[in-house]
Length: 119
Image 1: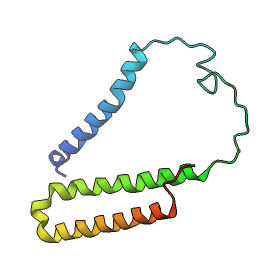
Image 2: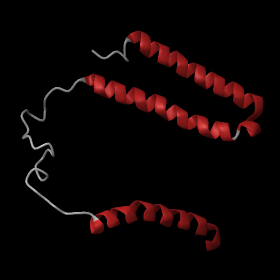
Image 3: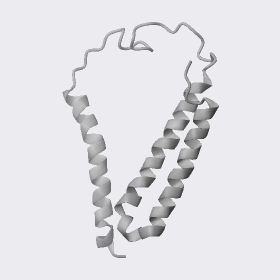
């Protein structure tokens, strides 16, 4: 088994772990530690919970979150296409216009249905 081929992958994992862990450890070591009862309360604002945790929740929050994720993730599909535009040529350009057309139709549909309205 050739381990030299896996060295870049291992290095990438180690650098990623270091970027994630080192700031946490530095903050824990160097950061101030001044606990008080308000900070240790269930809600940092200092108010006690005044209602049941099983109260009704407006479904529009979920709808807005799902729509944001849906249209935000489509942008992630455009970056690789933009990088490889010269390689994919005209068929890639046509495919991305079809993709964006479907997105625009979905956006118009949700707009007409009132999903973006907030009362």
